[in-house]
Amino acid sequence: MSKQSDLVVISQIGVPSPFNPQTTAIGPGDAVTTTYAVTVASSGGANRYFIDGVAYPKLTLSRTYIYIFDLSNSTNTGHPLRFKDASGSSYSTGVVVTGTPGAAGAKVTLTVAANAPDALRYYCTVHGNGMGNTISVTNSASLDIGTHNYFDSENLTADTSVNFASVPTTANWRYSFVAKHQDPYDIARAVFAKSKGVTSLPHAIYFKPDGYKMYIADYTGTINEYNLSTAWDVGTAALLRSKNISSLGTEVTGLFFRADGIKMYSVNTSNEYVWEFNLSTAWDVTSAAQYNGILIRAQDGNPNGLFFKPDGTKMYSPGDDGMYINEYNLSTAWDSSSAVYSQHFSVASQDTGPSGVTFNPTGTIMYLCGYQNNSVYKYNLSTAYDVTSAVYSELFSVASQDTDTTGLFIHPLGIKMYVLGNASNIVNEYDIGFIPKITFPATVVGTTSTFAANDRVTYTFVTADSGSTVDLIAEEII
Image (tube, rainbow, N blue to C red):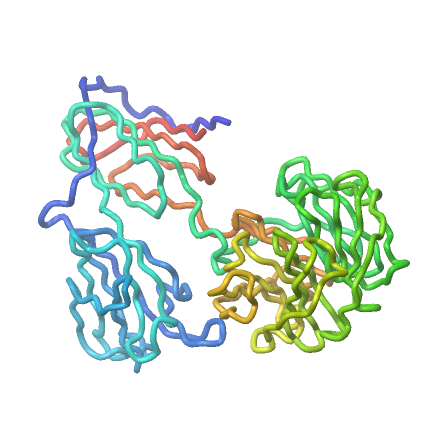
């Protein structure tokens, strides 16, 4: 797809030939200064630094730029902000501390050195890393006009400000990049995208790996199959067919498919069974025939959710009674009747109503949704697929969309999240992470359009006054 903007050609000027913008370091006296307003407030059950009102965000800073962290707000009292390098050692190069946190005039100034490491962290010297987050350090981007007419920044992986320097009196050039999606799996950056009404009492959700089919289990014991005309876009979902499995127990709260679509698994709270089905036609729920099952009542009398490790040797189910994620080992892969309880992990500190669980493909991140607080929780696992190694990381509230959260699915690439709402009978779709933004100096005349992940974006500029005014005369998004 190609998108051509409606920008008006402001001027037509001959192009010097050849002509080549290049990246260069900012010269003396040209440093860019940014001031961040820092406050301290509770987020996710602990005190965090809020940077310009955002809870402990990851930052991207540019070498040779100056950043002022304004600590004058009274909430900063007792929370000295400093920096570390990737090894955890104190980083003080270019750091100037002024005043006492919480008092007027208090601030920490960081002049990012030209040789600063790629990764830093801001943190509280009293309360540790948890109050802050990571810092990505990149080269500052300015353009020094040379001898050709095209500048390609390749992949844009962070919010970037581009400055034009040493522009010839008469110049025309193009700036191009590919927008790369950042911070997948980071639910703290999730943004609500859209909702889709589904059948009543939805409690579990699953997607075919290509994103063109969605399956929703309702509480009455029906598995509903939807076709999506656009992959992963719930707004395009249309109900295709249904399979009633209530003869095996109603109150279905968990649903999972093997990657080839010829096995389906469900769990219900009416008899606390995990049921296994064989599908004679892959991904066609009406072809499902019950194969075997296993009773998991001994671990929890109210199981809510179901997940299998990709090789079929482990099974997981949250329990509403014990508020645990229960882990089982399967001696025969994908044979649920061979499951043996192994261990559990308590989620009571986050939510007393766990209602769905899923993992990232490597098993190093676990996600849980809970209907008590209507939130999605993220846990980091130091040992893949070992729930006892889980450490709570962050949450994302979905209460604005629905107040009875029952099911959860994360896109395999970590770029989308889907959450079922039982109060409104909807599936809510969220975008995870962010698309980097590009910022041009105030001297640029013309408005850019919004681009999406993996778009190739090209801007064409022209100037006639040594860069005092730069006209954006064309834009293409492919």
